[in-house]
Amino acid sequence: MNYIGSKYSLLDFIDKTIKGIVGEDMSQLIFCDIFAGTGIVGRHFKTQVCKVISNDLEYYSYVLNRNYIGNHREIGDKDSYIEKLNALEGVDDGFIFTQYCSGGGNGRQYFSDSNGRRIDAVRATIESWKKEDIISDDMYYFLLCSLIESADKLANTASVYGAFLKQLKKSAQKDLVLTPANYQLNSNEHEVYQEDANTLIKRISGDVLYLDPPYNARQYGANYHLLNTIAEYIPFTPKGKTGLREYKKSSYCSKALVQQSFENLVRDAKFRYIVLSYNNEGLMSLDVIEQIMSKYGSYQVFQREYQRFRADKKENRNHLADTTTEYLHVLTKE
Image 1 (cartoon, rainbow, N blue to C red):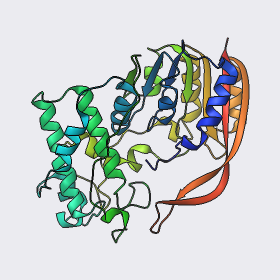
Image 2 (tube, rainbow, N blue to C red):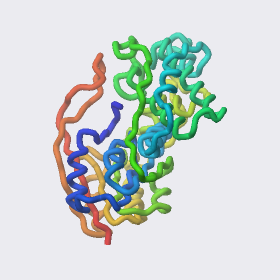
Image 3 (cartoon, rainbow, N blue to C red):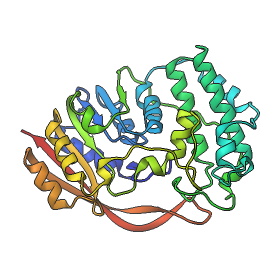
Image 4 (cartoon, one colour):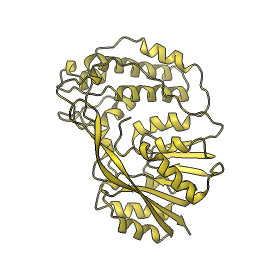
């Protein structure tokens, strides 16, 4: 997925830095990704550690991680269910079509009319299969994850869901075809949560705590509100031109709250190693981060410059832009 703050391009930097601190063999360690987003970092370490604990405040993120992290065994004939969903006809009375497509009459165009109808048909069918016990919870999250990712590729936006484009771009004109959200198999059980990180941290423990909180005032609940709407699929009254829903606000997006929230998290963490990803444009300065982390043990910082991707307002979903610096702040708790 095209995701704000994605660490996909930095996985090698994160991997080398963490292993340089804890050692190459992580097979007996518990790794926690407590601001998981799409779960790309947890997925990277899933087969290298004895357990991944994955968490995010947003429900769409929970769905992605419940599939990619929580699912770790074969769950049956996944392809046959994907084929059945791909064969469905669209419906005219679903929530996505009526509220977020131009044909619905609300002036919103996040998806083409045909894709909106198909998203509704697929989402309703997945829910009915779950209610009728036709599919397991594992299959439910696999199919729902497949829908969210496949629909996101066809969204008629520049990048995030804060606004839609007036004209359907080329990618949004393609027909919805579900691509299986295949996950890694392994023999270990993992844990997936949808909670406030500062609340969850008091109940969990492990070895490596990876932190990738929001850097700035942009709230993920607003930027990805439509993914939550598809994931939850519970009708509500959308607000305004963009059709926004009520969303949870993170204290890590508030300049007034972020420092205290971060220190509380570090203080309460029952993990030996804490690794914080944070770039040079964040609400907290490097000095503040060092000051806070150094209170609780031995502190080190590593950095890498990389090419950042920005949303493109035109046809392409993103384009290469200027460089930014990513820092990995590492604390060994004492």
